[in-house]
Length: 234
Image (cartoon, rainbow, N blue to C red; front, top):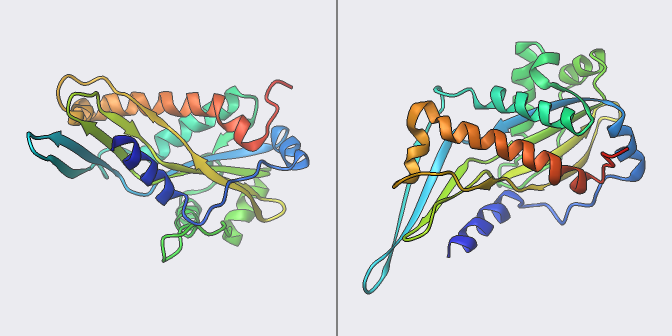
């Protein structure tokens, strides 16, 4: 049941996406030697908790959400970590907020939000002209974006909770003004708690922040090059 729920979350995130092909060798080669702006955006600043409790004659499902918007600047902090992670695999990466002034960063956020249509399906990114011009002026060739839905915590009685951060990986070609890639990007794992999954909220979400940074670095080092067809060893 827990595995089914996790797969359902990722399926919903990937709505409108077929199996994502890798970048063409030409684009992958360009990306490896180009200037990149890294961006992370979390659509729902919250943790969705789902627990299945075994009863004698039935199972009880419990769901609740905890919103942390306003208490953690998750987009900025994780963007910085993501940029560092991309740099660690050899990409010339800078955080998106380092190359866009505040007003244009807000326009970029709207661009990100527009990649999910009114029907909930994903649509290709269409870059605002002012944002694109600013990126070009800062010699940015590609934007690599992680658009995450919200944190999910699944707990089944007798088992450790599993945390996931369902995300979509997008690559936007700034010079050609076209999206080159989008595909589901898997991140998550266990976070040590004693009794309740909600312990990750203690001390200003300290455990969740640490885990998120670890997930970002691990997935960027292991899954991202394979997904995009990058030769990070060259």
